[in-house]
Length: 60
Image (cartoon, rainbow, N blue to C red; front, side, top):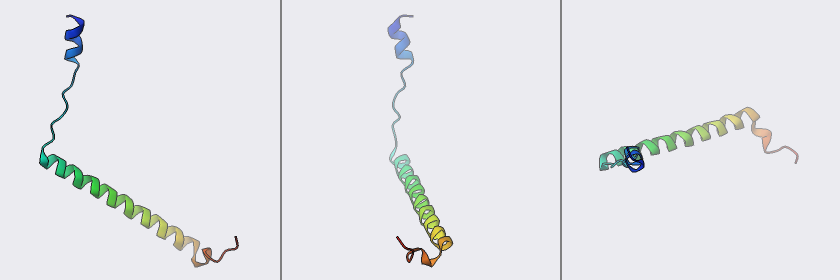
C-alpha cells in the first residue's frame, strides 16, 4: 500500500443530519438547559433558606 492509500483509508466522512435528528437534538439541548437552570434556582433557594432571612441585614 502506498502512503496515499493509507491516509485515504483512515478518513471518516462527516455525518449527514436529517431534519428529524436536528429537531430532536435541539429538543434535547433545551431540556438540558432547562434542567440546569432549574438546578441553579434550586441551589440558590436552598442556600438562601439555609442562611436565613437576616443575610441581607448583616454588617458589611
